[in-house]
Length: 245
Image (tube, rainbow, N blue to C red):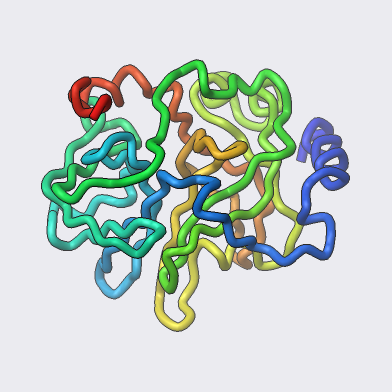
C-alpha cells in the first residue's frame, strides 16, 4: 500500500460514517436515487443482482453484468416501488466492448430520470469523501448504500496507472471486516450483487474491480467504470425524442 493510500485512509476515516458505530449498509431513501432499478436473473444457480439507471421512460442504462446471453425473458427489472418492467430489447453500448448495456421496456418508468449531461459529473480532480457504493440485494427492492471515499486522479494513478486514472475512478478500501459479503456469497444460496458508485444522488460509475480479497475484506483499491467517459457512446443508443418524453 502506497504512502498516498495510507494518508487517504487516515483522512477518510475521520470523515466517512463507517468510522463510527453506524450500521452498514444503510437503506437509501427512494428519493435519493429515484431512477435506480434492480436487475435480476439466475445463471447456473447463481442469483445475479445488478443496478440499472432509468434514463428515459423506456430505457434503462445498466452494467454489462446485468445481461444474460441476450435472453430477454430471463432478466427481471424491478423499480423501488416493486413494479416489474418486462424487457422488450437489450443492446450493447458502443461496439460491444463497452462496460454498459441498455434495456428497453414497454412499461414506462416514472419519476425523475438519470441525467446524461456531462456537466453533472465530477472530474475527480479532488478526493470525494462523501461518495457511496449503492446496490440492491436479492431479497429486497430497497436500495442499499455504503459510504466510501473516491481517490483524486493523482492518487488513483499512483495506485493503478495513468489510463485507469483517466477513464475510471478509484475507491479507497473499506476497513470493515467481511464488508464484501454484501456483494457475493453463498447464504442462503450463491449470489452476486453488483454495485455502482454515487455522489449526492448522482451515479458516477459501475463496478469493474471490487478490491475484495478471499476473506470478504475490501483490502485494495476498487476500480469503477466512469459513465461520463462513455457518454458519447451511451447517447448514440437512445433516440433523442425518447430522452425528452
